[in-house]
Image (cartoon, rainbow, N blue to C red; front, side, top):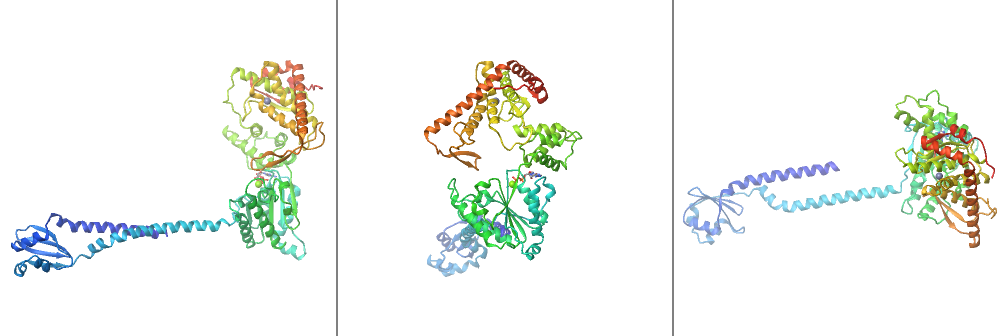
Length: 610
Ligand code: ADP
Ligand code: MG
Ligand code: ZN
């Protein structure tokens, strides 16, 4: 289509060029000729001065006997001789001159008549054609709007073949999914036995625990086509688009059976209906209904298995979890220490590791890291080793990257003035010392006044083992540790800075949670207030204040009590161990960081009873 347009354009330009050259050569001789009026010509003929007249249409090229050339025009309607007669020229005089009649040039005629008409027509046509093209383009877009955005991976097109061996740990999950793999490989075997294979399997796990990875592994193990789509891709501004995309997804999938349909982040369409928070609610409901009816629509054993992943199962609509839909649920836990080591092993398989690398130690130091964090860690370490021109990744790089991931990159360029450095040193020493003096805290791994991310300094504490539950004593101690920086500043400088503000915010929020959500105060085992967790902003909003003003006052009082007591604890510790505090601060000012061993040597194992 485009080439046709080009050809037409080129032909048109060539045509114009030829025409203009032609008309130029035609006009040149005439330019020399003087233009006269018809009556002047008649006079000249009467005087017998004209030798020859060449008639070309209504144009008269005149040649005088003295060789001069002239041009004149006659009326179009009447002939030349008739016109002369009208001017009273006798027929004899006319006979004296040679009269030549030349047919008018075709080209000139065309140029004169057709171009003024043709040119705008062509321009209009081109204009229309372009508009039409645009419209057609838009139309196809409109048509494909309701099409699924699912990406199809067939066994042949998968570049990186992920297998179950690439997924560390998650033993139960793999066993469950193995069954699905068997079915997809040979559906008949199951159908013959009358076994019912689930239509939908829901993978539940925190972000980065390997849901997507596992789904890809299933498709690969079964070597069947794999449609991957994210729940959010169904949501558009227009109502009805999402449901039409769902319809299209299943229509396409039915052509490829047996196959696996993977809907990642299903909570973005599968939210409980009737929750009017946030826009696009109507659309979401329609999309979810369509998904439900599609899942009801096909027979259990026709070879489509829908795998979905979510990190917020609690927000899912109960209808999704009913039999015949996602009735099989697989929970992916966050990796424990052993699993972390395995994951690290998998992700360092293709990396050059120094002999001193001890992945077990790294696993110990990374409680709370997900699979994705660990994969990121090994990659960062490799990058760091390359930056240092090392041939292998050593333990140092791995250790440093843990901190980088936990706290953000170091900002060595962030230079503190002498006074600021002193304040920062006492502040961090305060946190660290309070932490070390209480019994329900995690050991300090590192204290530093090198700013990282937003923090001016940091005290890195890591639990000795993985924790799933936390106790009230731990929270109470944590509050005191949080206030340690503030108290140290106050004690030493008798002055407060803005450096403690984020500590205070964290402490206040924590104290409020203890009272209103964990039932850890005098107000007893009641939760106060309802919260809406915005997935979009990853923030909690109070949506309901389901308590009286009187209770509100009590909550405030309890929060204040908790903070006051934490303040007193910190103050007691730092006053009693002032010399240790000074010592820590001095070393920090000098060296900027203290590692665990040195720290333990200075503070000892002494715990303070409050
Ligand atoms: P999710 O979908 O649960 O948010 P992903 O499956 O996308 O998480 O995981 C992100 C990355 O983390 C994976 O590509 C993989 O490199 C790594 N990962 C997560 N869990 C594991 C695991 N169990 N074994 C190996 N690698 C893992
Ligand atoms: Mg994912
Ligand atoms: Zn602080």
